Length: 426
Image (cartoon, rainbow, N blue to C red; front, top):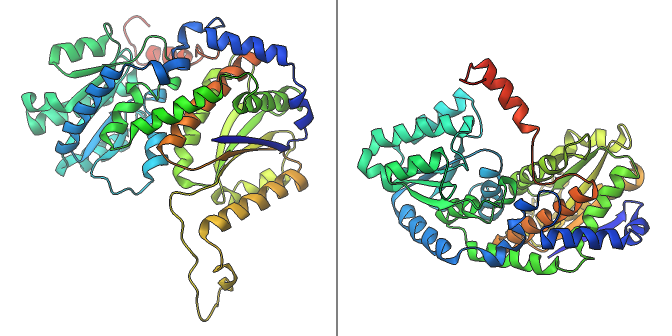
């Protein structure tokens, strides 16, 4: 469901001739869970090992909740919300017609944003899913306090209980203790799956169920990607090799993931966390950034075309089949001179733009371009793509000889913030 194209990278032959023994060794480390951070490789077989009874329970709780609410507040930061939001927007689009809206809180400390959500909810029926392994992370922790109180004030303590769900540790942590004390429904974050790899667990699946997304198809896609990456020489690993060579051999510092679909912008944000947090350590790794074309061609396009060289390369997502397509209408006066486009659909024009941009950037601007061809843009494709990028990320991290599954650098800002806020013990 994803095909990789490297003809615009100038390293196509190096990819084909890459050390297959090294790839085999890393592949075995991933599959057998023997490499660095192996205690967080539970995601590798999750598409076939997930708890079917828990999924059934999530479907029941989500179905009941959908009947009662207009808005589900998804409380979380980083991997606790990005996966669900990426899937939601990619699958349902930016202006969907489903009765339940997902709003994401706890991913910022902005007082303005938080108050705007409070105001927006005044005449809404809403529920809350609080997603946190520990329940002590500052951003989601203080957001949950605010909106739990708001819900209790609106619905009363007893009626609020059925509208608050916790996705957290199975047995320990502050959120688990709170959920037990308040009798909130809980679902489990597996011990061996980290946040940025957790979209197929209740972290991503429960909010998507409340949103009415067909999660069974997400699992079908993820399982297919799992099967397609069981062999050593697969498309995900080729992508990992390509970005490794562009970084180490061609000295690129930045990878820009480019989408031509507005509703995949958050997918690129999820990808940025996946690779940035997995590889950016020990003074190593590409800096992951993103663009939406053709929008950003009218802002960053100039730099990409003619700016500093060997700074960034592009990885372009080429969606072959859109969810919806439409024609350019004919105008009798043709004052804008665009009638020549009426024989084309918007998607045809969009893909033609893609081809023209790749040609301009790669052949004139001398910016390497990787093309990743996506068959379509739906639940199955999301499941496939998310798993595919996770597998590529694991390979890529191990090629750099870092632990892809920890994030020690994240703790530095937290420690500094706690000291400034005079948190006890800091």
